[in-house]
Amino acid sequence: MPSRVDPALCAKCKGSRRLCGRPVCPIVKRIAEGSKVAPLLGKSELQAATPPSALVGEYGYPVVRLGPIAAPVQGEDAARYEDYKGWWGKLSLEEIIALRASTVYSRFELRVKEARGSGSRLLEATREAALSVKPVDAEFRYAKPPSPRLTFDGIIAPVGLGGVLRDLKVVENPVVPRRVDQLVEDWDAKARDAAFELYRSGADNYYISRLLSLGMLGERARRRLVPTRWAITAVDKMLGDILLERVKSSPEYPALEVKYAEYIGNRYLLVLAPGPWTFELLEVWLPRSVWVRSAEPYISVNYELSDGKARYPEVDGGYYAIRLPVLEYLSRVGRQATVVAVREVTPSYYAPVGSWQIRESVRHALSSPPAAIPRDAVELLDEMSSRLETSVGKLLARSRVLKRLVYPDAKLDAFIGGQV
Image (cartoon, rainbow, N blue to C red; front, side):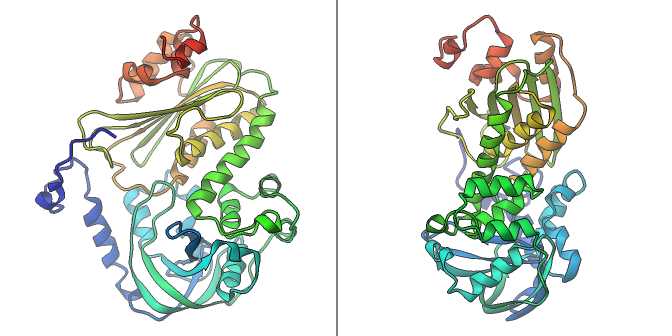
């Protein structure tokens, strides 16, 4: 990313002068929220519930740190600590950070292939809790008591504390759907097939990602622990790919539409146009937004044609987090479309809290009435200009698919080759 950053900027600012241009200092915010969980610090035992939630790290792979995430409460109240769909549009960024700052990542270490056996008591107890669709009370005992660790991530929701787990005991019966039990015990089903069967039976992508991450889906020889970050993106892509097979055989979208949503400093604008399945994501990080301190916005572009293969090396979890709800919507309405998605990240999104907000924002935009129904390319560009800070000219300069919508007489091959 283009940036001219003074390496001593934070030292000069000390969190009070806002020299980086952000509304809140992420470092100061992390310290402030960490100080609120003092009652949990240094405890070797904790009576708490998991939302349910678990985290598998990627550091040290193939030996990874993993374990359940505990909320500082017991019973049903724990659900609100990982209620992504319930958070959307109701909690501010500060409220989300404050809520997650009091969660505890209770970790231990295993080799990823140990997921195939049942020799680890901690793994079995973590899985037992993670299978539940409702909060589960448990007793946590630590070899190293919880200490502050609040960090921010673009894919995973933040966790406030971390402790080394010595023992874990689930003290109430998890609520596990029968179909889940059957698929977890099916050692011959491929992970992709099991994931979609769960999805079709009503499980959401967050639940499926948790099971995949803890090595509970797939053929016996291929099961392993999967870092949570990878599992989230893998599930988004797997489910999206299966939905795409259906979408590509559907009639084309009937008219040009613009859908829009905005939440915690992120703007999502989606253009749906008649045409064969084509998808482009233009991701814009505005000046002074997190990770971009230069005077110019950073724009990344990724796109795919009807084969479903991303064409740019910058494709990441955010791409698939937007692609999945788009394909969910098209599958639901029985249409295929040429889709351009723009995500514009503003300085007020000063601390990334996970890809859930991307997914839920796009779902909200697509479930809402169109923000506009442009009659032509001129009206489309006017609508985009009215909702985004980034100039449409800069977007067109980087785009492949949007450029094709605006200049329909030119061949797509020319755009892809950079000739137009």
